[in-house]
Amino acid sequence: MKTALDEGLDVQPGPSHELSSRIGKAVEYMVAAMVVLGTRGAVNASTAMVDDAGVDVTFFNRTRSIDVQIKGRTLDAKNSMDSKFVANVRSATFQPREDLTFLFVIANLDSMELGPFWLVPSMEFEKRTNVLKQGEILRITASMKPGTRDKWSEFQFVRKDLAMKISQLGSAVGQMPFRRIDRTGGAAQLLGVHPALRPDRGADGG
Image (cartoon, rainbow, N blue to C red; front, top):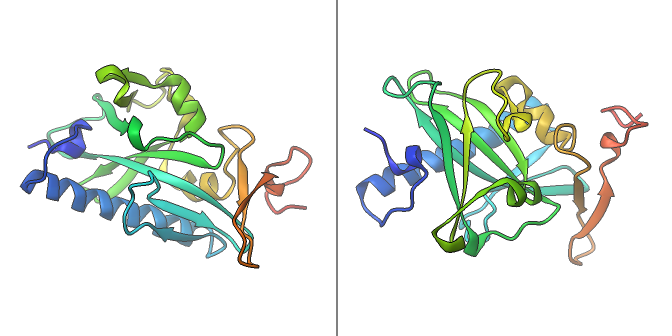
């Protein structure tokens, strides 16, 4: 039976909504854990208790951070990879900015694995999304087929690349600024391009 998470629909509170929320939160924690493990702890993760600001996980190292909103769809024996990934974003909570990105992900309930993924900068999402309900809903509809060439395909990748994509945001989605973490108590400030993303520097910053 498909849930609201499968269809990318907005539903009223109830049993199916509770299951969708539970699965969605589990996906967020899995993604966060995979990034921390995949970067050997170089990148840490902080999850939001309440995501009314449109941020599910903030990934950060000692000096910089970036916000990520995660949207998932479940996959099981009743759904195949021939189908479409569909997810909605409420325009009321959507504020595109350079240090916010979307991570769309398939959660296979049979194998308990994640992937494929789509990592889409929020400003790019705003340009390509389908607008529904007189602007209230922004929707992504992406093919899950390997080798597809739809408008979201350039953002698609597989599980083994997740940690790299997060730790080097910008390798697939352009020059992505990070926020500098002000440890003196002031507000976080936008930094330019992460040193690892500069054309003249490698992933190790050298």
